[in-house]
Image (cartoon, rainbow, N blue to C red):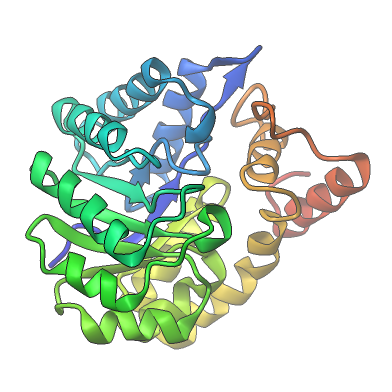
Length: 294
């Protein structure tokens, strides 16, 4: 059975005055583990990996692994639009003790399907670490097709995919074409439950930043086949899932954590910017309705 099952949190990277808030990150990791989250993903899109320099990226991965102390799997974000850079980041993740690497499809340069395959093949050959491919066309400008995913799944250490097209037709085709032990994780909270229903293994979640226990419980119920109770939680969480995308991710999640007093500052790094007053009010209402703030 894959270790990449359940609700993995795509954890935010807190900053104070523009620098990584190391104590804040450690506190968030402890909050996640104590709340029963199934795994932690540092340096993903939600962790603002695009604005971390290599030294910061390495430090966030190392600090997460050190704080987790083996209690849950750590899936380190190591993707880039440069294959050589992806290899370097993945090598570091392995050396640091990560359980796997989450690798986004190269963004901006828009490789062909063959280019995508060769990219992942090259990293997998260079570093003996379990790799989860991350497909998010809305961010990257390229959609990794199910046939290409199936080719990658034949490579020994490519063990799963974070599928964030929001398209259950594509999710089903990936599951149909790939081996039974290939982990298919939803990249969108709102498709977490449907993805498990069609044979997926869980979710890499933004909402888990603020409601880790409920997201983990929903996935536990779904993976056990209790869709009646899982659906109750899905609809309880649904307004919160929507609230996490009132602005560009992770701007709302970081603001929410500040309002919940989990981090000192919810400020993102430029070019991301804080929400306007109307959006802040909407977010606070969603958090209050859920019972996360007074």
